Image (cartoon, rainbow, N blue to C red; front, side, top):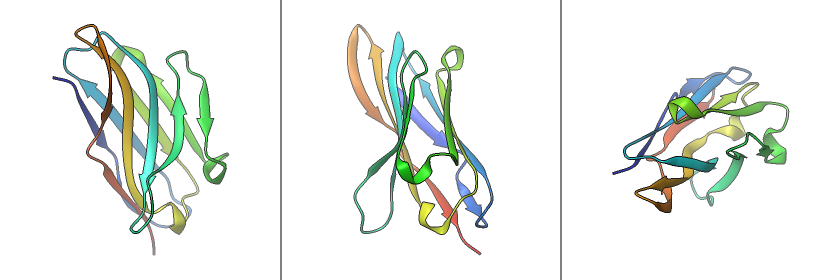
Length: 119
């Protein structure tokens, strides 16, 4: 059974940094596109950044120049480096991935990790 587990969230002052990790485990043949999404209370879940299997990246305008998504295919792990955090970045961050397991391509979500930028 495939699982996605996020880690690295927490409380940080505005202007600070955090690095989120999304680790996939289980019977994995390959991982295609991986995205980080976030959802603040009362708002819909929105894409923050994604990365293809080849490493091509895409960012929401609100995080360009501050966040960097990367992946380590050998470790089945994707990272989100978040710098210059703002209070409006506060949300639950979710990892989403398209994963080949048992010859079937499926979409998976992690359980989420809270990021809070506040004094």
